[in-house]
Length: 104
Image 1 (cartoon, one colour):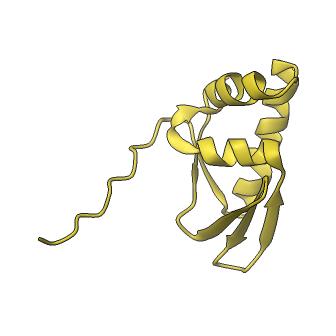
Image 2 (image 1 turned 90 degrees about the vertical axis):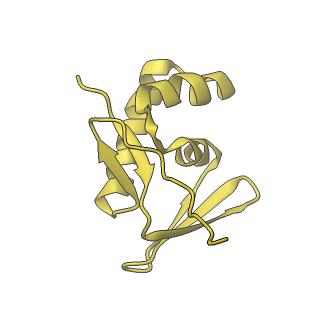
Protein backbone atom coordinates (compact mmCIF):
# COMPACT_ATOMS: atom_id res chain seq x y z
CA UNK A 1 0.00 0.00 0.00
CA UNK A 2 1.38 3.43 -0.91
CA UNK A 3 2.06 6.05 1.71
CA UNK A 4 -0.44 8.78 2.47
CA UNK A 5 0.55 12.39 3.13
CA UNK A 6 -1.91 14.85 4.63
CA UNK A 7 -2.03 18.61 4.88
CA UNK A 8 -4.58 21.07 6.15
CA UNK A 9 -6.69 22.80 3.53
CA UNK A 10 -6.12 26.55 3.18
CA UNK A 11 -9.94 26.91 3.07
CA UNK A 12 -10.38 26.29 6.80
CA UNK A 13 -10.25 28.16 10.08
CA UNK A 14 -9.17 26.44 13.29
CA UNK A 15 -8.74 27.21 16.95
CA UNK A 16 -7.52 25.13 19.89
CA UNK A 17 -9.94 25.22 22.84
CA UNK A 18 -8.56 23.27 25.79
CA UNK A 19 -7.55 19.87 24.41
CA UNK A 20 -9.91 20.03 21.43
CA UNK A 21 -9.33 21.58 18.05
CA UNK A 22 -12.33 23.30 16.47
CA UNK A 23 -12.15 23.35 12.67
CA UNK A 24 -14.50 25.16 10.30
CA UNK A 25 -14.72 24.86 6.55
CA UNK A 26 -14.94 28.35 5.09
CA UNK A 27 -16.58 26.94 1.96
CA UNK A 28 -19.68 25.54 3.68
CA UNK A 29 -19.33 26.67 7.34
CA UNK A 30 -19.23 23.05 8.58
CA UNK A 31 -17.77 22.74 12.09
CA UNK A 32 -15.74 19.83 13.40
CA UNK A 33 -14.63 19.28 16.97
CA UNK A 34 -11.50 17.15 17.14
CA UNK A 35 -10.69 15.24 20.31
CA UNK A 36 -7.19 15.23 21.77
CA UNK A 37 -5.97 12.33 19.62
CA UNK A 38 -7.43 13.76 16.40
CA UNK A 39 -5.93 17.14 17.30
CA UNK A 40 -2.47 15.54 17.35
CA UNK A 41 -3.08 14.21 13.83
CA UNK A 42 -4.37 17.60 12.73
CA UNK A 43 -1.33 19.38 14.14
CA UNK A 44 1.04 16.97 12.39
CA UNK A 45 -0.66 17.30 8.97
CA UNK A 46 2.23 19.14 7.31
CA UNK A 47 2.09 17.45 3.89
CA UNK A 48 5.68 16.27 4.30
CA UNK A 49 5.33 13.54 6.92
CA UNK A 50 3.62 10.28 6.00
CA UNK A 51 0.49 9.27 7.88
CA UNK A 52 2.17 6.07 9.09
CA UNK A 53 5.08 8.12 10.51
CA UNK A 54 2.66 10.51 12.23
CA UNK A 55 0.84 7.58 13.81
CA UNK A 56 4.07 5.90 14.89
CA UNK A 57 5.87 9.01 16.19
CA UNK A 58 3.05 11.15 17.51
CA UNK A 59 0.04 8.93 18.24
CA UNK A 60 1.52 5.65 19.48
CA UNK A 61 4.19 7.43 21.52
CA UNK A 62 1.63 9.65 23.28
CA UNK A 63 -1.35 7.29 23.63
CA UNK A 64 -1.62 3.67 24.74
CA UNK A 65 -2.93 2.32 21.44
CA UNK A 66 -2.09 -0.60 19.16
CA UNK A 67 -0.22 0.70 16.07
CA UNK A 68 -2.40 -1.20 13.59
CA UNK A 69 -5.62 0.03 15.19
CA UNK A 70 -4.24 3.57 15.39
CA UNK A 71 -3.31 3.55 11.69
CA UNK A 72 -6.70 2.14 10.70
CA UNK A 73 -8.50 4.80 12.74
CA UNK A 74 -6.22 7.53 11.38
CA UNK A 75 -7.01 6.49 7.81
CA UNK A 76 -10.74 6.69 8.57
CA UNK A 77 -10.30 10.12 10.17
CA UNK A 78 -8.37 11.35 7.13
CA UNK A 79 -10.99 9.95 4.76
CA UNK A 80 -13.81 11.66 6.68
CA UNK A 81 -12.14 15.08 6.82
CA UNK A 82 -10.85 14.95 3.25
CA UNK A 83 -14.41 14.23 2.06
CA UNK A 84 -15.34 17.64 3.52
CA UNK A 85 -12.30 19.39 2.02
CA UNK A 86 -10.73 19.88 5.46
CA UNK A 87 -7.65 17.76 4.77
CA UNK A 88 -5.78 17.36 1.51
CA UNK A 89 -4.54 13.84 0.79
CA UNK A 90 -1.66 12.91 -1.49
CA UNK A 91 0.45 9.85 -2.25
CA UNK A 92 3.54 12.08 -2.49
CA UNK A 93 5.05 14.50 0.02
CA UNK A 94 3.98 18.09 -0.56
CA UNK A 95 6.33 21.06 -0.43
CA UNK A 96 6.27 22.81 2.92
CA UNK A 97 4.51 26.17 2.69
CA UNK A 98 6.88 29.08 2.32
CA UNK A 99 6.47 32.01 4.70
CA UNK A 100 5.15 35.18 3.14
CA UNK A 101 7.79 37.74 2.37
CA UNK A 102 7.18 41.10 3.94
CA UNK A 103 8.28 44.06 1.78
CA UNK A 104 11.22 45.93 3.27
